[in-house]
Image 1 (tube, helix red, strand yellow):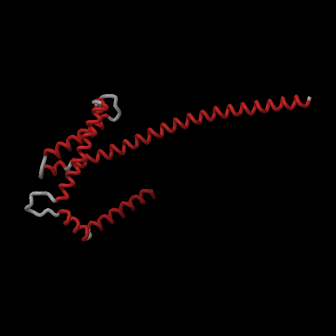
Image 2: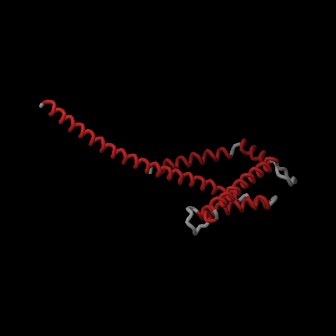
Length: 182
């Protein structure tokens, strides 16, 4: 219960801080300055066209990634009914990227703003990346655990051999001690 109250308290603090930041004059001025496209002008502000070009460049990079994956791994990598792990997610990701690319190249003006809704789906790439990092981390941990187990077995074997050598040394010392006394 105490944890829940702490989370609720943190949420309330963040919400209140966000609300107060949104009510400031500085925030309103920034929004007005960023809007900066006057009514009656048909062209976007320079910074919007630059961001659109950057967005297109990133999308082209993702399309190139899909093409390289097809070339290197083939269609089986995207076949959700095949044996490739996470193939359905790869197919979904490819569909999002290709749809975004087509919309960015074909659509212009107000219709292009509709393509902006795909930004939400683009966040899927971040989720996929985080999932890939988690899977890779898990794989590395499995490899380390296997190596640790192998080292442990080798250490146990070496300890056994060392104990045998100690016993043999003790036996030889006892023989040596009995033969020199006689």
